Length: 362
Image 1 (cartoon, helix red, strand yellow):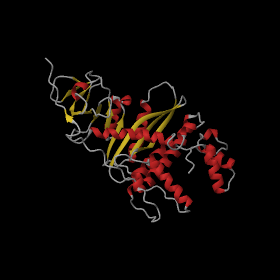
Image 2 (cartoon, rainbow, N blue to C red):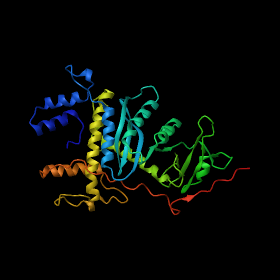
Image 3 (cartoon, helix red, strand yellow):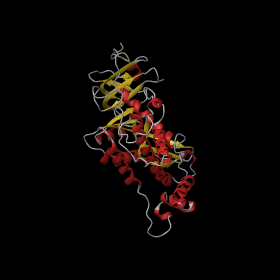
Image 4 (cartoon, rainbow, N blue to C red):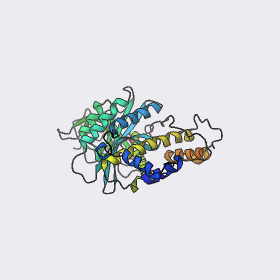
C-alpha cells in the first residue's frame, strides 16, 4: 500500500492501521531482518532464507497454470554497497525473484559457488515432468553452469559472446559465429561443437538470430534439439530486468535503503519478492479478465491494450486493484492463479532468413 520498503514508512502505516505505537512496529520489522545473535533474548531465532526461497517457488508452482517455466540468472547492483545474484521466474513482462544472495559490492571471489547453490536449492520445488529453461546473458556463460543445468534435468538457454567458433554436426571445419549468421534478418540453428579449445569444447545446439531491433546477433546454446526450441525464447530474459526495476524506482524503492549488511538486505528481499508475487498475480486477473468475482470492478481492457505493448505493468496494476478494494472497503484479494503467456513462437520465413551453412574457404 505504501509503495515503499522503507522500514519507518511501513511501520508508520501499520501503526496507524492497527493502533499500535510506530516505534513498537518498527522494532519488530528491524529485528525480523537480524541474525539471531544480534537480537535481544536467549531464545530468539532468525529467518532461514533458503527454506523460505524454496517455499516461495513451491507457492508459485501451485499457482501456475501449465507445465512450462522460464528461469533467469542475473545480477543487479545497488551503488557501491551490494551486488545481488538472483534467480527469477519470468512472467508476463516481469521477473519474480525466487532465490538470491546479497554480496558486498566489490567483494573478491567468483560467483560460481553461489549460482550452483541457488540452482540446487530450487530443484526440489519443480515437478520432474515440467519443461524448464534457464536463461542467462553472455556475461554469465560458463561451461560448468551449462553442465549443472543439464544435470538438474533443466535446459540451459545461455547466450555467448560473438568471438567464438562452432563446428556444425557432420562438418570438419570450424566457423566463426559471425560467419554463420551472415547479416541482419538472418537466423541459423543446428547441432554441433562449440568452442574450438578442447578444454572448453561443448556438444550442444546453437541458435543464432540477428534481429533488426538488436545491435548484435544472439548466439544461444542449449541442450534441446533445434526442432524443440526457438531462439525467440531468449527474449524472455529481459523480463527479469523489469523485476529489478519493480524492486527499485518502479515499485518498492529499494534504492533508498540505508542497510549496509548483506544478510539483512537478503531478508528484506523476501518481503519484496512476496509482495511482487502478490501484485502480479492479482494484476493478472484484471489483464486477462478471468475469475473476477466483483461485478463493480471497472473493465480496464481499454486501458491495458497490451498487444503488442503492455500499457501498464502487472505489478502496478495489482497494487491499483488493492487500493481500489481498500477505498471501497472490500476484502483484499490474496494471490491468485498465475496464467503465463505462451512462449514466443519460432521465427517464420517472413521474419528471418535461415542462413545456409557457409562453404569451407579454399
